[in-house]
Image (tube, rainbow, N blue to C red; front, side, top):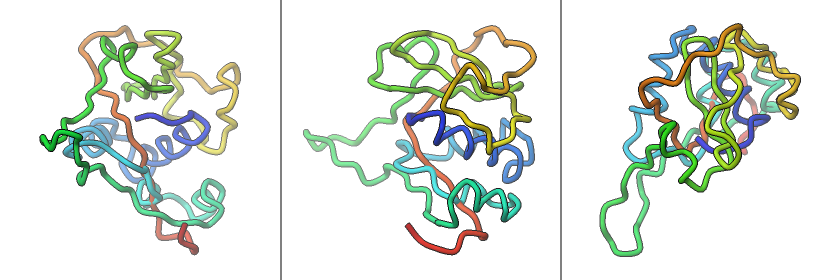
Length: 166
């Protein structure tokens, strides 16, 4: 999933805490395994189950659907291939940011500069300011890199509290 931490972390934390009821495996099944190619947009549907005040704070009351990249057309007409990014291949991809769902939080990687990054605690308030990594609420312990977790270029989110459409 590509996109700046200031826009992605609030949605991912809220989705984990509410929609997926603190189950990172269920969240990974939805975000990683639940799409054929990848995500075009994380929509407010990821915010389902969150308190209306939180959804409004994150979206200013706007509502938009998550969209997938299911209708891509390749230059040579061949079927599009899913973009899987692992810890081992992240630096070879043209991504600004990568997100790895860990049992203790979301590891945030800038593949252009590092192969590993800080892990934001799953308990972090989604309304935190995620523009400065030095102030992020980090998970207590760092999990060693083991099996390749998948990071996908993506965007998604959604909620019944939102009142306007983007």
